[in-house]
Image 1 (cartoon, rainbow, N blue to C red):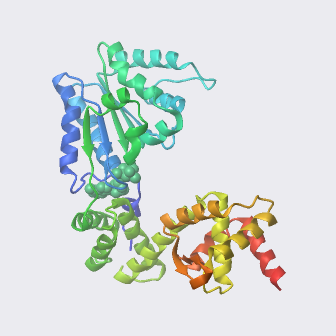
Image 2: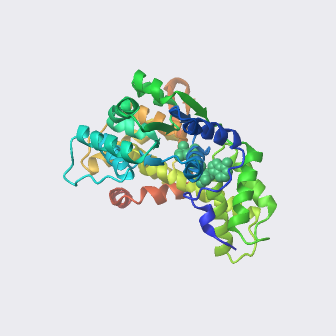
Image 3: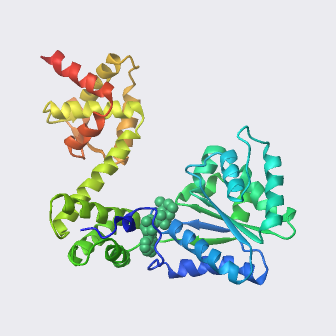
Length: 389
Ligand SMILES: Nc1ncnc2c1ncn2[C@@H]1O[C@H](COP(=O)(O)OP(=O)(O)OP(=O)(O)O)[C@@H](O)[C@H]1O
Ligand SMILES: [Mg+2]
């Protein structure tokens, strides 16, 4: 089935990125100003998940590295994924290390590290580009101190230039950035739009040709992946789905990937997504889900907020957690609704008033699988089932 599965891995950056020609050109021409001897503008890249921001940036940086020798430019770069380097200090060390500096394990004051960085830049680089990918993580976690300092660095440099690329998929990012940092960071802005169905098809086709043996995946199957992924225009999810469909076909001993395999892959991707959502919920929301699950499993036809509250309080008491007010519980319910895990409707019972009926929007088996990963949830359920006799 697979010729080489690596082409479907998230780290692989293809030599060509279909439908990102304009963004590549924009970014390349911004950075290329170094060839004319002027400082490239700092760039702010924004776009939803999986729209090629990281891939485009890595590709352009790679191309510039290759070209720079030809132009006799001493080019270097640091790629900082702020999801992993989310404190100012750690991000700073990452940049220093990419410059070839060694910072002692015991640590150094920031201003000392900056002086070392400046010295190293003057000595070895005509242009050094720093990419802060998923930059919102850094700023949310630890503020924008070093970003500020990096944007000021050029005034301390004589023979070297620093340019910065900030990347995010967080629409609200601009709100928690200092105005000065924001304006120097976004001298240029490149916006990435979600991919549409045809664009996703082209992207998938390119990957499929590399990753699968010929004639082992039907064109229909690729089109199907493109169609279901076009809802959110996320190329990562689309490629993932293609890989999973291939794995499923492989497991089933089929010699071709069909639409049926894609449909199964779709369900699997959906399942994983639900899993991620559930495991990242705060404990009380998980307990609420457990209560709803318990009632659903008990065969309760109409699950009301009152029901849920009684079970929730009972569960909470069992594990020594405090119970919550009805109002708070309603907040939790609203949050789970926003996530699409449950839905609710208000039903009127004539003179008995109105009540909210809650429904699970995801398969109970999936919910059970992920809730039962917590040992304590298992114990609660076991005990409740036993005590009912
Ligand atoms: N135009 C394209 N052609 C081929 N592959 C692409 C294209 N755009 C994105 N991809 C692939 O899709 C995946 C996701 O892209 P990428 O990581 O660049 O997204 P992103 O915009 O950085 O998303 P996030 O905001 O989640 O970081 C990667 O594997 C990338 O190689
Ligand atoms: Mg990215």
